[in-house]
Length: 419
Ligand code: CTP
Image 1: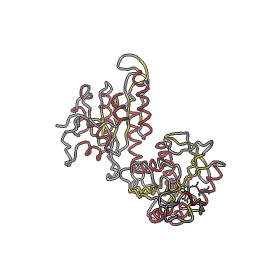
Image 2: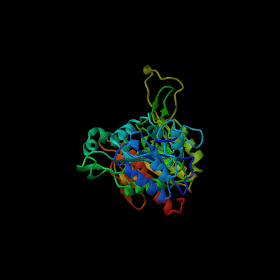
Image 3: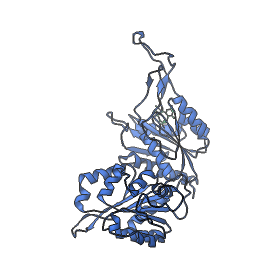
Image 4: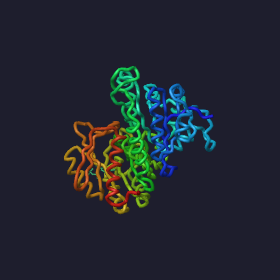
């Protein structure tokens, strides 16, 4: 019989979001676990389909039966429980089923385990395997919460796009007063509702995202490249998947893992990127040019490796503006570009907006050698024809969410946002 339950994540692509979004509720070992039972009841009352996953320690505070009675679904405790539906392993089955995974309450140990990606219990394996968005509601004593180890792990989770709800200040299990008390079920319910809504917001739309650098060959062994890591474009692709879009990611050479669920087209040169983008732009609703495309390429590629003694002068020629060609080829799509500038950022971004037929340019300033290259954080302006939004410096994952919020606003204004 299935025993433990924890609230966790669910995948995006195969699942049509229904009126009853699927929530995996991961419950871990804290006295606040009784509030997870209240939350489970509230979720069901608000139309969610809930399946609980309890860690072994959680079962010392609450029972699987509590959650089974409240949700009408079997609760799970062990990696070897019967899946109940289909024949897949239970962590895969639950991970595929979930639209949202919520860990309520999350102990310091669980937070550390999630940060490290440990998969030696059902909840850990499920969270590692699912593409569904994750919400974590910490609950612990103040000293544990404020410890640098916990804070480091929370920072890691946030940078990955995990939503941390609370904790708040109040009376703790020890009887003392301080930060570490789990947020109330109503606040966690609201976070789950927002995440579930967001998850389906782009359902039925097709997004094309370019990412990473291009490499322009000089001879068979050498090339000209740039410092782009691809992190921003990959985060945008992941966020689009999380919101239910179909995603094509056209990526230059990067060290990043492909986002599960995206169609990934790898390219090397600007010319390859141009062909890949123009082939697919017409079938896209949204085109985001986040790649750091080379502005120049060698006028001719040498057929054999150039010898040092030969001396060398390189003639470069401008590449074709892919973003502009894409907006001309697909005028019905919404086009978004990036601008990386060392001076007069705003004017340059507005000029690009018009020249490339785009509705939004995400502008980065590069000053004193400080730019977004390779970094996990970014500081950008969202530049439109009529206005401008400056975002605070934040993780590229969070910038991606803010850019997609902006795109959804632009789509809604054009009557192109489903639902
Ligand atoms: N871009 C493109 N094709 C190119 C070069 C750039 O589509 N051949 C896109 C990038 O993906 C990015 C935007 O254009 O979205 C801005 O790149 P940038 O190099 O700043 O712009 P350029 O149009 O090349 O303008 P500049 O003359 O300022 O370099």
